[in-house]
Image 1 (cartoon, rainbow, N blue to C red):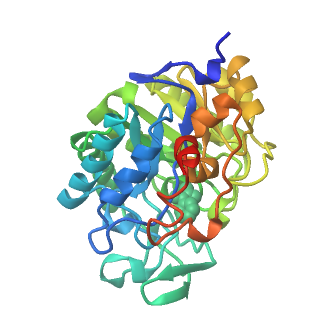
Image 2 (cartoon, helix red, strand yellow):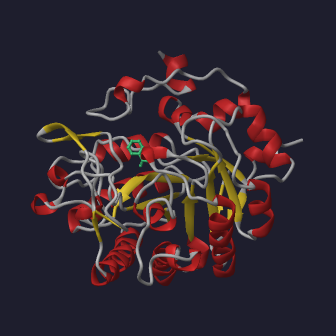
Image 3 (cartoon, rainbow, N blue to C red):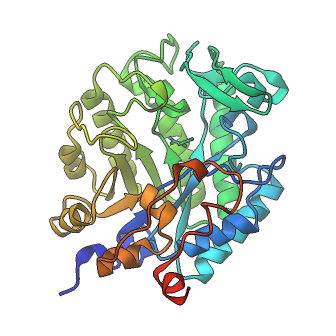
Length: 365
Ligand code: 8OZ
């Protein structure tokens, strides 16, 4: 009997070879200055092409979307050429890859912004905490609310980024709607205090997120567009919505109407506890007709059982994919996993990036 986790699936229009997916992982190793992916990044992704689907690390749609040093962009010709190295390498190894489109909003700092300007958000929100900038470790500041014209420019930037992703050879895009970044800063009533068409009722607060999705659909078609959501995660010190069930439930219904390919749910706290209170993930699975990709602290057994029982269509693994380039094969064989070294998660070079052994290289060594 074949285990369903390791069997092919159709995610919208994307045919994948198994249901062990690679979660988006920020690694801060783009080319300094141009923020273009390079040969090193292509090697890293190609090593992991055994995933059914790779979701790229978050990649900013415009310069204002940057919140961390040396994360890649997806708006310039150099970045497009760099991503082409990545998609060719992944496709050459038989894999599939979508680009995760990102705007950090307030989770930034003037030192990382064009002209040293304030970061932007739905409202004058300060996420707090510290950020590493070229000028050292700095305290975050309050963001500036986007004007209506600027919101239009952000939507245009999502559309443009999707076009760049398509020209660069991606199989589709995942809109980053999670972890307290711009789209969630608009969605959550704890952050969005606007009184215009983008604030107040849920329909207004989810408008920017849906416009980003619609822009991606215009470029790729609904069958190649997905979104990542984190209904109950306080990542990036984002205060939770006062009613995640109502707010994210409305988002799921709106996404279902659009017939997009997948929703990628962070079940519980990002990279932390699977504390699911506040949002009914099983109900979301039932209300959404596209693929349900689950993420967060899944073990091999949980993934096998979840897919076999039909609770989820695929499971995305994050940290285990950092240290195990051949994770799907290891899971299928029940082989031991390499431990990951958090000291090298965020750069700067090949150490802790492309030097984790696969089973073959470990045996050859
Ligand atoms: C870790 C470090 C920096 C960014 C996210 C894109 O949380 C991120 C991220 C994660 O979604």
